[in-house]
Image 1 (tube, rainbow, N blue to C red):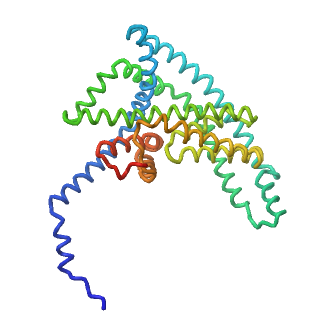
Image 2: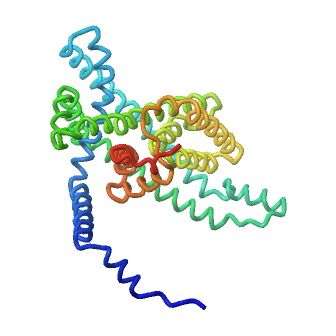
Image 3: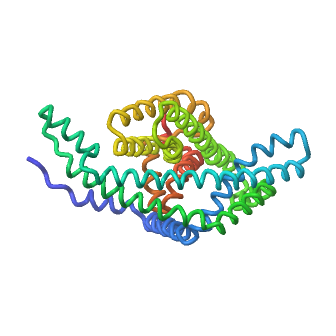
Length: 349
């Protein structure tokens, strides 16, 4: 017969939780909650300085290259002048191109979805001809609503993004000052860390945070170029816009590439037909395999590899705390934490 649990055992277990342990847990919880609240309150400041830091990190590579041939001051002047010209030209040309293609694509998709012979009806007829009982009406209605809401939001948001030039100028100015005084600012930040841990923190941040961002940006940039060239070769509609979409989504670790490819294939399916969408899917899968098996291991070999469960947990927490910015910075921050605390269980194979 089953014996009733001994109440003394329960009392002994609860007695193991001391007052000091409980107080430490509550203080830890309160500190975490206060940190999240402060992060959300200064989200705009963190957003500006995060983008400025990433831009300064990218500009530091041509600066180090030019310093081999000329002095630091002349190299700084050349990098700042050339980067200003490049950024302004890129914003004008790429921004106008993206805006034009987004508007054209939005109009085309809405017209296609409102026709009586759209791709969903064609697929429904094909399935019915093969006696496959599958109703796409509900899926079609949901996808139509999602497309209408998303495209309207994108079209209405693009002018606001280009008109918000004040934030853009602030990011450029802060990035240039970070580029000039980067070493001093980094030493200033390290003073917040106890002296015995500064070297370890510096290595962890530079390896995991800066190394991850540098590698992820390089991989996404190369993937965008390769996707654009292949799409243009196979005459896929709107190759520039679709390549940029895949590259931006690829910046999200773990699930970003899948989301980008799924969105692009869905757009192609609605715009054209399922055969072209299937062709795009095959192209994207081949490029993703080349990236994951050839490019990523070489670019990311110096950074820490996290377990997929930890990656998804970091993405969800980062999105909850800081939205889009947290989505992009969650994984490198998690890598720094895992490296500092030597959490081998959280590392991937």
